[in-house]
Amino acid sequence: MNRYPVWKYAIILVALLVGAIYTLPNFFGESPAVQVSSARASVKVDATTQARVEEALKAAGLTPELVSLDASSVKARFDSTDNQLKAKEAIEKALVPDPTSPGYVVALNLLSRSPAWLSALHAGPMYLGLDLRGGVHFMLQVDMQAALTKKAESLAGDLRSILREKNVRHGGINRNGQAIEVRLRDQATLAAAKAVLTDQFPDLQSTDAPDGTEYKLVATIKPEAARRVQDQALKQNITTLHNRINELGVAEPVIQQQGQDRIVVQLPGVQDTAKAKDILGRTATLEVRLVDESTEARSAESGAGAVPFGAEKYPDRSGQAVIVKKQVILTGENLTDAQPGFESQTQEPTVNLTLDAKGARIFKDVTRENINKRMAIILFEKGKGEVVTAPVIRSEISGGRVQISGRMTTHEAFDTSLLLRAG
Image 1 (cartoon, rainbow, N blue to C red):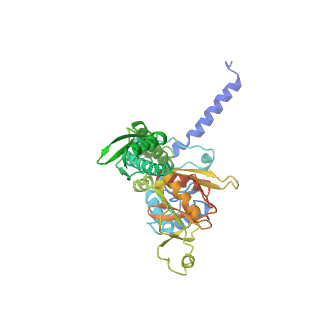
Image 2: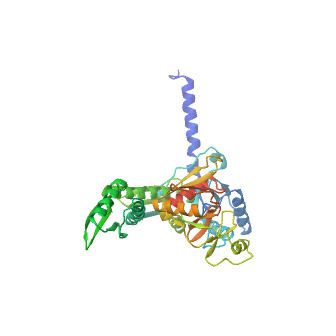
Image 3: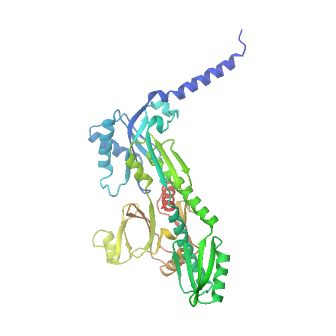
């Protein structure tokens, strides 16, 4: 006679059956594969990319076991490493005609051999670490001194602007390493400058001493503020690494802090060490320039003439040429934050930029003097520039907050803001 009712045995049986099904992927093993992902925020990986990959493989006489498309990459699975290497070469030749300006990342990887019906049930194999699966191990060091120097440079620019606004006259502001030196003529001006530092710059501490007939005020970043800058730099790098590793398709990477300034990265299953290193080392910089509105520039945009002297040509996201002036109005150094968002009226994806005091003042002056003219925001990756957007200036923009948009997807807005913060 059963001790327990039948329904309890049925529940146990169902649990065992479900458990058995979800352990099956561990018995199929892994196959060598080639993964194609975007190398730039403006390059999309979609069904068209999948079709191009399939055409390249067919032209090379290679038959993959499976070609799949997910949210961010195309993956092709093969039966041997020889075919994997041949496939990588064929795909790179088709998708990356110019290695100096790659639009796609073509990397070696490993994929589960699980059948489609198991994948449809979201059943995946247990992911193993480097000791059981192999892969890549990186030890990265964050340049903390560079982070502090950049912070000091930003504070020096802000201090220069605030002293001008407060009508505090000085003999010059210079940055010496991570110290900001201000020369002042007399004791009264020194007291006024110290008052500005106390009120407006809580992250700075100062000392002063006579310097000939003048006074020299030396401001340095407080230890607790320096620790915040270093912690932020470390956390930003870890976040950036997490997002960039998604391009390699690593399901369970290990990214953790080691010590005060080091980050350990372990990528189980990744075979292409050089490609992993290349992706992790990507940076981006931002430049704001005015668009050249001359007749010669319009002719150069259409390809009918040469680029005018003092101007340069860059493509926009649709591939259309834009002629911009060489003079740089603002750079990424004036950028304190970049976050993705949405335009309040159209709900179009945007990137919201926050400028420091110097950048806000310059941007206000430039927009006031160039109403009804176009301003280009250019993103540089690996030395190649691309115009993210080139809007018409409708009015003066003050406050240091800038919103950029222009036919970008939510994913592109997120990637662009990420690259700008990391760069």
